[in-house]
Image 1 (cartoon, rainbow, N blue to C red):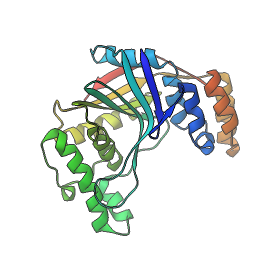
Image 2 (cartoon, rainbow, N blue to C red):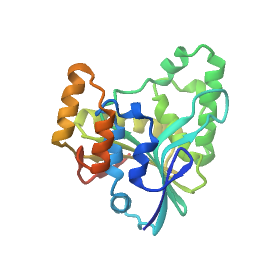
Image 3 (spheres, rainbow, N blue to C red):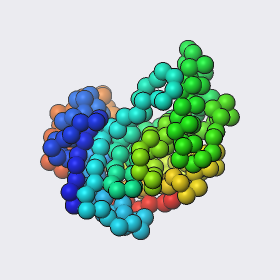
Image 4 (tube, rainbow, N blue to C red):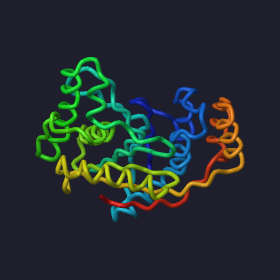
Length: 254
């Protein structure tokens, strides 16, 4: 399988070289989702094949894998949406969001209140809704959204910004405890109903068992004790493959 690696719009020589494209402080904590996410994709060909097998798709002969895939809001002024991994080939694309120890994100009603310019935030939200509507054919008014998770909306919109016809959004949960998986299942189900994604956008949860190796256990212990920064050790461990071991993923379609 021929794989083109990219980071934030630019080409990267290899998956290991990707590690050095992230800001160093991304690895200050050994419990950021970036750590298992990069470890998981180190064997990229196997993981792409595994993803396709789980969804009963034929694996591609070539594909592009871009980390930190950025999409600017199509309306209003705001931050870009950064999808952890955007994977595409032929007529198919996957927007993949890695989750590990992160808490739930804020819902739309809280996000709107946190801003200093409500009108602008409604424009930003409306822009994301418009992107999704171009795929689903159903327009959703931003004023009708409240308890839906804002981050998930712009991640779905980012996948919809791609030209491929067959679009998928995957929330990849590392160390998939029942409560964590239940949260993402609940939130994705709400968005499926609100945006009427139907068969136009596949929404999935990928559960990945994770085993912390000895080096990682020590780094986590030190971090939890006194927030000892360990970016150099994390980077070295990722390149050497000595931090965590990712098991076979199983995918649940919402």
